[in-house]
Image (tube, rainbow, N blue to C red):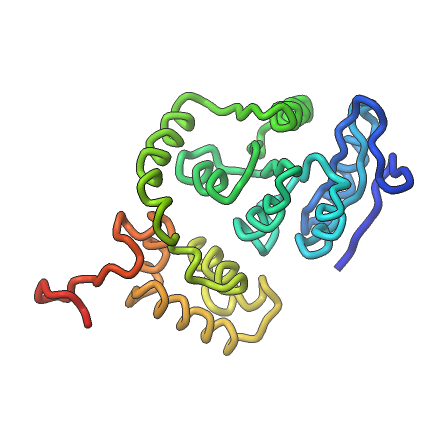
Length: 244
């Protein structure tokens, strides 16, 4: 675990007039330190700190000392980390390293991002996305915007029912995120620094709660939000009758 205060810190992390307070979260130290040092040279930004995990970032975020969190998707917490950071309504979360495909951007948007950048985005592009987020704008290509609108049309009626994710604990959501990425139990254990039997227990619980017989089907249920089936609806068995 590490937590570094960035250049430009002021008592109480107060923002200089006209600047945006930024916090960087990335598990890669050289990337995290390099990004904070480069951003600290800009007069329109105040770097209030950086951390290698969401857990270390949350105290500063919850004290409302941050305007924008730059969140590296390589963090083991994945989409769950975005949800936890975005739980503070005054904070805009920008996801770093997003694959610019409708599925990925929609998943991040559902988790609570206010903007995103890909691996090929320039520094100026990143600063522009931060400015957009602070002003409530969300910049994306037309095909991504169309995908977001289609997704909104699907989840509108479903928002009145419990979500698939609401069935899972925070740790199960972390395991499920890595499961969706195709990681094995051993890889998940290493990524989350937990024991292999613990991972197996979480996976078993996830499959049971999602009523999914296989890891692949569980990943599909999480990706589609239940495939249009309201939670609690009986799934048909192989003979066409509801499972009891």
